Amino acid sequence: MRLEGDIVTPQGVITGYLDIADGRVATVAGSPVDAARAGEGGRPLLLPGFIDTHVHGGGGRDTMEGGDAIAAIARRHARHGTTALLATTMTAPVGEIEAALKALGPVCRERGPQAARVLGVHLEGPYINPGRLGAQPAHAIPALLDDVLRLNAIAPIKVLTLAPEVPGHLALIGPLRDAGIRVQIGHSNGSYDDGLAALKAGAAGFTHLFNAMSGLHHREPGMVGAALAHARHAELIPDLLHVHPGAIRAALRCIPDLFCVTDSTAAAGMPDGDYRLGEHTVRKCMGGVRLADGTLAGSALTMDQALRNLVQALGLPLPEASRRVSTAAADYLGLTDRGRLIEGAWADVVVMDAGLELRRVFVEGEEIDVIVDA
Image 1 (spheres, rainbow, N blue to C red):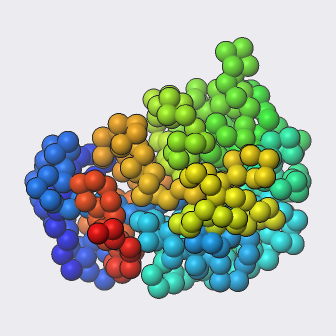
Image 2: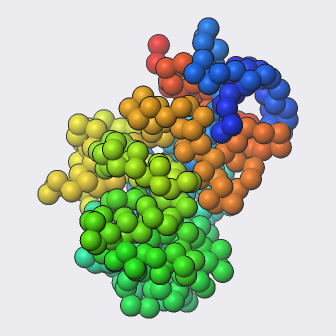
């Protein structure tokens, strides 16, 4: 199969074509074009498929449901251009987390039809600070290495959110890293020094930067200050509700490999109404998802809208915006064959028009049924 158009790479844009064979990119050919002119004359835009490392739900389903929920979530997000994701848990009693992971394990091993690839699990809780729950239920507990490794044996944990200031947590970061689990600092009330110590111990990044962590003050820099001063990687929710555009711009200047996530809930891709988020009921209204007390509770964001926000609201050049929703996350996860349109990579491709509206999606060479606006 051959796709023709303007191919977006982190280095720029080339006008040409790519061939897909056996689920991989077989050939990429073309000549450079000014990125500002990408899509001119009706040429399709070909971008690497989006990678979302923070997905709680979508299409009315929640990861913590177990059963066939994650398969349905992976299908819904694929229709919005997400070609690979991490299924993300909520803070809950350990038995409920185990039940969710038992359902996730088989889906991580084998991709279903018309679905995004589930790369593994983002364990967001229960190892967080009970004083910084955000929208997480009140079931936070201290982490023990054996407990985490037991959960990892049920389904592969690729990312774990942890509050490093909780007694005993700092010493766990190195062993978790050695086990192949990336520790992200999040849901934390820790100080700047706590954040710096966690990074020195091997923490890889920060969970939804700015949200549910101690903020930046010029005399108390907090976790946000530690991230801006020292982090190479952090995730951020660009729905323009969780983080002000000015703060996003500051983070983009400070953190070289900042990448975007949705933190999506069951409300993603659905009309306004009430949905499940772990044990909570949340309401989608006016583009946001909130608890009854008004606390933001995840989002209704999809990655195609995240890209549009980066380009249209924040003014990022398309190649840079594309990197922030695909390549940077792939690099963070150590994936050299995703998040980029190069020969030999998985054929994870998003086709958009000049207005950045989704037209076609391919996951590992399989074309996904997407809803295209007339």
